[in-house]
Amino acid sequence: MPSSTLYLLPAVCNKPLRQAAGFTLVELMLAIAVLAILLGVGIPAMQNFIIANRLSGEVRQFVAANMRARSEAIMRGRPVQLCRSVNAGNGPDACDSGDRNWASGWLIVVPHATPDAAEVLARQRALDRDTRVIASTASIIYNGMGQIATAAATFAFTAGGGHRRGVCLASSGNSRVVADAADC
Image 1 (cartoon, rainbow, N blue to C red):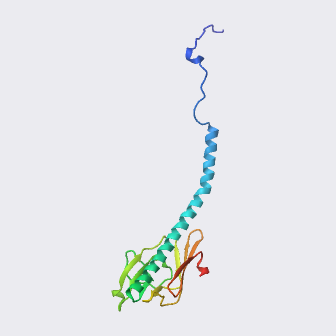
Image 2 (image 1 turned 120 degrees about the vertical axis):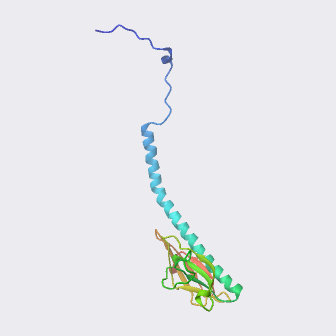
Image 3 (image 1 turned 180 degrees about the horizontal axis):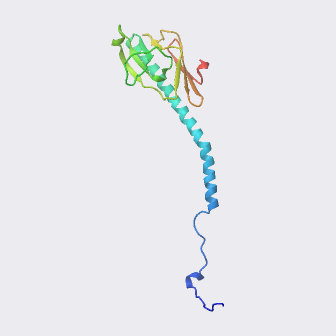
């Protein structure tokens, strides 16, 4: 049996409907998909950028240490040594010739008659754990004229992702940075 009740709607319902503000589910899904693609491409590129910049900074630190050792030798008029150290940050102030990987740190020292009496001018802590610095020599000694007392040296810096840099030290004491140590 049909109902004969008549319902009256309030006057508010007679106004035209306003379009709802916000995003539809399809628009949100599309925005999330675009964001995921951008992040998928951007994050690896950003990681490579960070690794390359960190490696460049470490190479600059090493070149600066060479420049300081050379200028100290010229200023003092006597030999100054740049050498690999096992624990330059908080270990003994002694050079270590047991390995050719300088990533553990280095020291700038003025050698004296006994190794215990060496004057430490500067120390560099270990580099980033992903960085390797393979050298052709265990230490560099600059004479009082700023020349390398030993043979010329090559340092190969490598970091994760295949990033490479090389530092070439000529016997004159000059250094140059190259894309790869093989270019020295």
